[in-house]
Image (tube, rainbow, N blue to C red; front, side, top):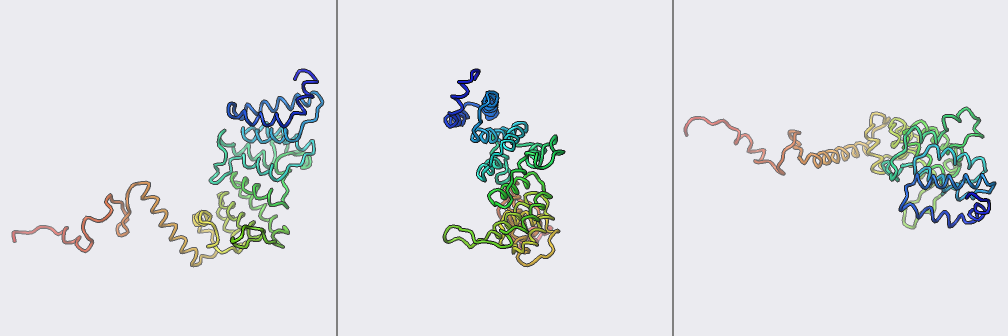
Length: 308
């Protein structure tokens, strides 16, 4: 793109260009695609051409894929400076590139984000924190908290960053939203339980609070939601039971779930060690059953005396 007419002709071909860049992932790494996008966008700007927003958002997604703090900073700044509107689908797509899937896996083709760098992308870059909020350009400045399609991914990524205080702050704000104070019914598939905006949000906050690692906050949120313990997902209940000392009330449901968890933990230990645990003695043994019945144990252990 050394010549003006070349850049102008290429600028109107953004859709074929985007398709070609996605296809080349079969032969090129994500950082290489990001570098190519950076070069194309820079050339367009040098030549005084308008950069298509689709190209900017594509570069932002590849920066997230490539775990590039510099790339995220550059393209988020472009989004803010050009006044681009990031849709909820795009916001969720970028959040999903932060390795926050179930158990924190997500897309790990390029490894994982460093927590310190991802935290800058979310809450503010180190060299920009002195700026007024309207001039900052981290993901938090794009967040629309009144829209659940934005908020639920935001809370999830804070939890994966172990930012329990951030999750708590969002919970405090959530409690005062119209979606919680005046809940609406959700249009869920026929046959499912009736769910409101409040139920969906409250359950999500409890689940993500447990993911953040601060079980004291998780139990506190659960108490404020007034959700019965047995209504929670199994993995959420298991995490909460690991911090049972933070519970203010322990009812019969919690006791039953604790016993079930104990049995599952014992079973996992047996599978991992290839040993079974005897209830009477509490140590492992190899066989599936005792050599002799417990009622005959004394007979076989008896010392031998004189001739009969």
